[in-house]
Length: 99
Image 1 (cartoon, one colour):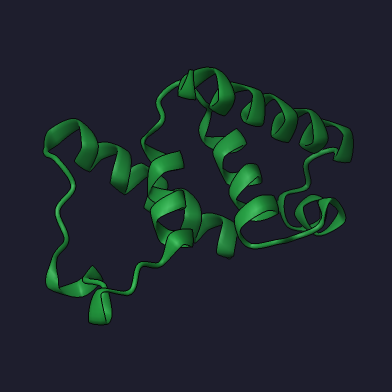
Image 2 (cartoon, one colour):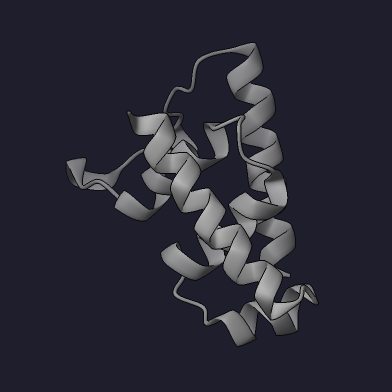
C-alpha cells in the first residue's frame, strides 16, 4: 500500500514538473518554517527523469523510510539481489547527476 502511495506521488509530481514549476499550496506548506527534509528529498528524487520509477521507489523505501531489503522484497516481490543492484545504481546515478 505504501508502495502504491509513493508511486502515485512520484507520477503526480512528474506530471506537475512537466507542466508547471512546483509551488507550495495550502495543503503542503511547511508549518513555522520548519523544513521536512524527507519530503524535499522525495520530491527531488521524483523529479529526476534519468532514474526509473521502480528504482526511485526502492531507493525511497530503503533510504528515506528505512525499510530493510527483506521488507522491500516482501512488499514488492522483487528479488533481493535486484533490489541491492537497483539501489546501488540509483546512488551512482545521483552522484553522476550531482557532478
